[in-house]
Image (cartoon, rainbow, N blue to C red; front, side, top):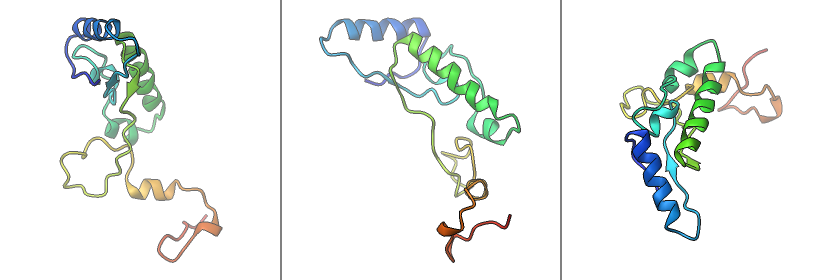
Length: 127
């Protein structure tokens, strides 16, 4: 079951009602990518992926996950469609333009420097 955002009280009430009517616990999914705001209208917005990924303070991404986990669990959601793992290959793509946390170049430069995995098409950066 996936619930679209709405007021937190209504989302929580609906999930509790649905869970009370089944003998097998339901999987209740949500999209808490930016904090709790992805699961209910009045959830806490922390930042977008682009903001968290481009900021030098990497604790912002951790905070996004903490807020999302606490708030979605309080609602009754037990399955998260997050974190998003989009890689921004095409800047013209308006769907994912603010969702990715890294570009291919950032991922490539942050890759471990293991020369045994280097190839002509994917050379390792110089130390």
